[in-house]
Image 1: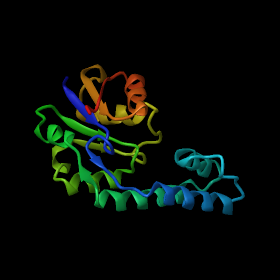
Image 2: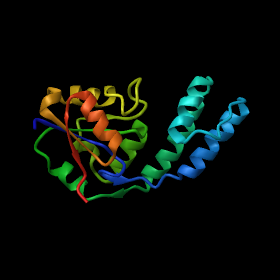
Image 3: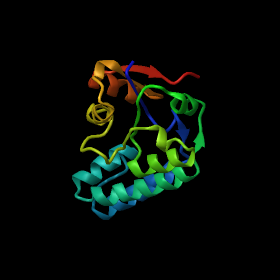
Image 4: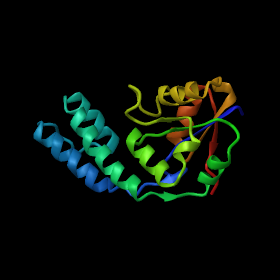
Length: 171
């Protein structure tokens, strides 16, 4: 492969984000807007907030928790592969870009990557292919010559849609 794109959380690092608190705060935001938030999980809450016109506030809430988690992120073994890579490397994450940068910096990995594409870097979110396509474009390699490494079915679906190879994190 001519380029490698890694997912962040669960792949390179673990972000200790309090997702229960995120969900509670998003539900409170939506309740204040008259939206019945009980039926939504976290990412559905963000979609509902966008539909209700409070997407920016929802994004701010999620990003704040993610940045806090990123500041305490623990390094996973695959981070060593990234650091030693001879191929150009990028990160494509469902986390906000700022949190990605905080976590990568915390573990001296930020200078090892050519691009960081977070949830808020482009108009679409994984599993839409655009975030991964943006990361691959930043590496200046064709999608068919890139591999996306991740830990979730959403990552595999993103890779398939973007036309890249995919590899699950070992272990």
